[in-house]
Length: 306
Ligand code: T3D
Image (cartoon, rainbow, N blue to C red; front, top):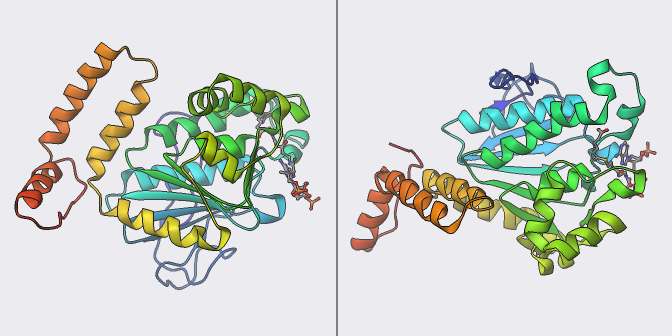
């Protein structure tokens, strides 16, 4: 189903998901209200959303500004993710950018422009927009793949790093741009960087604010995979297709366990694994997986909990 963007409200559960679109034709840039065609990107305004075969694809769409985040784009992205989270048809989310960049982070013109009191302060903007976004990606009970099609700078880099699997085009790069403009890495960067690449490299990335090419990012373990530019779309589509038929509930529980490991002791983690395995083991997909193995056939997973 195709959808258009919704609205943001910082109270838990109050953001409006994008309304289902039953009448849209055509692609990027067109608003709702036209005739429908399958698997065509339709737009709120700054995030394009398409769904096909269990994959929800969200495309940041301000290419002339390198997909810099505005509050409006946050609203649409968050609504799209919330809708994907609750849509049983959606088994995996792909996040990418239109044009030559993934995202250049916060729109710096918006910071300088006229805003209300709540958004005049950098901390307020994080509280209102970035922090909920990062938490939403981190807790979404489906795999979130980031397809980094070009430069990912500032909060744009850290939104990418919050995703479960990060694929990047060889020409892409990651830039903790914050120190260039007198800011602190945010959008979870100071949490993710040392965990992904270690303290020394995290300090270098944060303090030197130099661009890290995708191949180096892969070599350092910052991302999952660097892929030749002309192969990125196909490779991401293939992995998304694979995850769309995976045991989604088990993947969600694995995601939860890996996230908890950053603060748990070994004993706590073992207890958590026990509890989560109990849930996974009782799921239809575990029954199907084991039966398929014993019957020497491919499993057919529904992704459901019960
Ligand atoms: O207060 C708070 O909200 C706190 C939260 C902060 C979160 C953050 O993300 S802070 C970090 C913000 N991002 C940056 O500092 C990066 C700024 N951008 C750049 O340094 C460069 O654009 C890049 C290195 C990413 C790419 O350089 P280049 O030469 O390939 O492209 P360009 O010519 O600089 O940019 C192309 C256009 O995009 C240009 O617009 P124009 O002149 O053609 O109309 C440029 O102004 C625009 N653009 C790029 N980044 C941003 C942007 N416009 C607004 N905000 C941006 N972040």
